[in-house]
Length: 185
Image 1 (cartoon, rainbow, N blue to C red):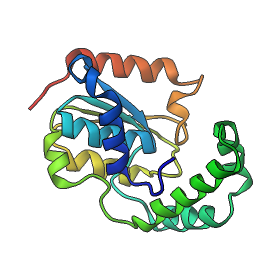
Image 2: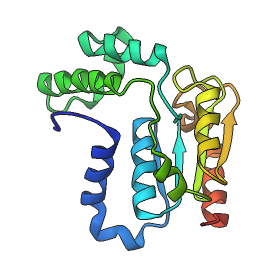
Image 3: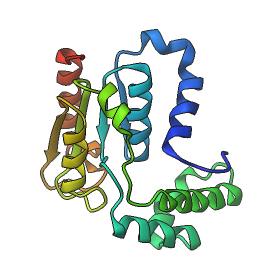
Image 4: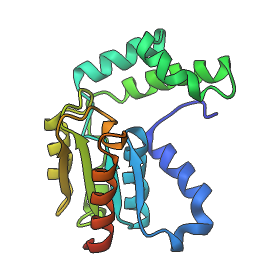
C-alpha cells in the first residue's frame, strides 16, 4: 500500500510495473481514478488511451464528499470498497486516507497542460450521460483541453456504468474502433 495517493504517483507505479511491456502496449485503458492515471501514463509514454468516467477537475461537491469519506465511509462507499479489502482493516484505512488525499487536490486541473498536449489526437473519453461524479461540463472541459480528443456519452449510464452489463458491448466496441483508427500527433 502507498502512504499517499495522487494520480502522478499512480501513473509512475503503473509505468514501473509495466516497463518491460511498454513497447508491446498499443492502447491504455482505465476508468475513474484508473482512467486519470491512464491518461498520465499515456502522456508520458505517448500511447493512445481510452478513459472512462473521467473529467478535467473535481467539483466542490466531489471535494466535500471525498473529505467526508476520508473520515467515515458512507454505506454506499463501504459496499463498494469491501470486496477489495484483501488486506483487511489496514487497507480500509488506506482507502479512507486516499479519499482525503484526493480531496486535498481540490478543484484544480487533474491533467497538466503539457500532458494534454502530449495526448493530442490519442484520447477517447467515454462517460456516462448520467454520471453524477464527473458531470458533463467536467468531461467536456477535459476533452476541450486535449487537442483532437474524442468524447462520447453513454445515455442513461452512471459513473462507471459504461462498463456494466447494459452498456459494455457499446463501450468496448467504441474502444476497439478508436484503437483501430487512432490518430497520433
